[in-house]
Image 1 (spheres, rainbow, N blue to C red):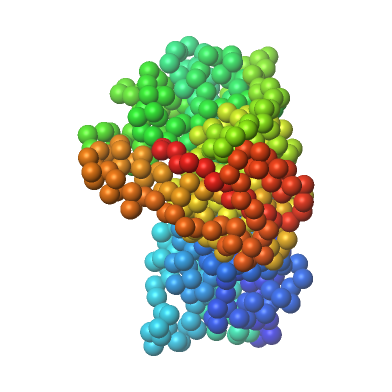
Image 2 (image 1 turned 180 degrees about the horizontal axis):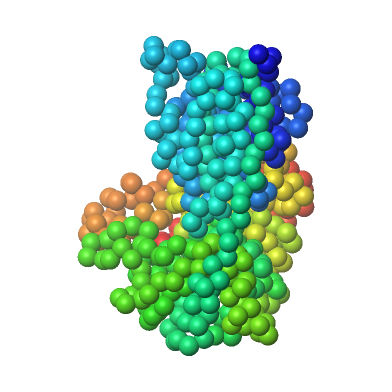
Amino acid sequence: MSGTTGAHAVLRTLVDGGIDVCFSNPGTSEMHLVAEMVATPEMRLVLCLFEGVATGAADGYGRMAEKPAATLLHLGPGLGNGVANLHNARRAGTALVNIVGDHATYHRAFDAPLNSDIAALAGAVSKWVGRPESAARAGADTAEAIAAATSAVGHLPGGVATLILPSDVCWSTGGAAAPVPAPAPAPLDEQAVERVAKLLLGTEGCVLLVGGANMRRAGLNAAGRIAAATGADLLAEKSPARHERGAGIPRLDRLPYPRDLAAARLAGARHLVLAGARSPVAFFAYPGQPSTLLPDGCEVHDLGSDPAALARLAELVAPRTAPVVAEAERPGLPSGELTAEKAAAVLGALMPEGAIVVDEAITSDQWLPEYTAGAPVHDWLNITGGSIGMGLPVATGAAVACPDRPVISLEADGSAMYTPQALWTQSREALDVTTVIFDNASYAILDGELRRLGAFQGADVQRSRSLIDIPGLDFVALANGMGVPATRARTAEEFTAQLRRALAEPGPHLIDAVVPPVSS
């Protein structure tokens, strides 16, 4: 029998399969895996103080590196702590190998305190779940997890594959590394592309809704050419996982968040062509309102998520047409009391070329698209699944993936309190992340939802503030306590000076931008 342990087989299969970063919050059951990771020089082990940071960081890494990272979580409760950001990763189509340690196979029958149904928990956020029951299966199941994570399904280029590893599988011998099968590319449906081409050339009232991998420069150029040649209305999905934008790239408005605004934006559409996006639905249900955002009678035509389909469509309908691109322009620097709008102007004025912007500003982000559209080319990462607490972790993972690029994390104060432990990892790893907290001391998005529902009237409106207001948070003290230099800005001039300094200096920084609340 081979003297190779299951843990060694797992690590060799991961590294040979191209996975060389693991965001980790391990416990006792994972110590053999940790020991193998430490002994494997090709593997970078990034310690996180909370599982939601580890899973969110793996999501950010995968979006920017375009290959999966691994996570390492401790049993069912550790997985439970990481589920929210695995949900966002699933909605983003991020390739991610989610490793969860488990009790030894023979120990599970005794129902020890940390015992739980890990597979059931994982199934809610995973496209594949596997659990080898012997060291001999450890390498093969790891290879299967990598293949599942990196394979495209529907609109998603990849997904979360959860590998549950019992501790005795890891410490036992008899393991062997396994090769990862190369995914077979899906053939282009030429007939479907030709049908959409005829539709666009001969029909009015067409909307081209772009998302997924088509939100990169090549896809946006193809979409821009199609719109310019056919007159189709060009629109982007609400929250693309990664949006390449800036001067020289076609500018796409994103579908608005509020239901009424989104439905109004799509009013009059007779045909909706999907290019990497899902058919749009309301974020939430409202009394007496339909869930779909499409007008009655609108027909949906799905090109799929493969950028080759959109490129081929551009060849057919716009062979000699150039797209309309955003001009290089910067807003002027504002002055006076700081507001979310003025902060957006400062960001647009100072954003460096090649920046990676992680946007979890929530209600404070409404001016950001306008003021940054003409900035140097950058990537914009959004909250894909609506589960807040992704911003700081995703920024952490993006900085690990792209150490030569500045990362700007735009964070709502309430959302920041879900995963502030990410700041510690940013400090420990000396990551170049500048975090801007939009500190309005309020869950302002709830204010907008309460007004839409008409839930409170008269004096109850003021009493509802006890649910919405969140005063007393000291983000400067919190960041400094985790090793991240931090400052506070109350005026546009202070914010400008602090952002200049943070972007010029290596390593992490945090700016507490005190602004009044903005209702969604």
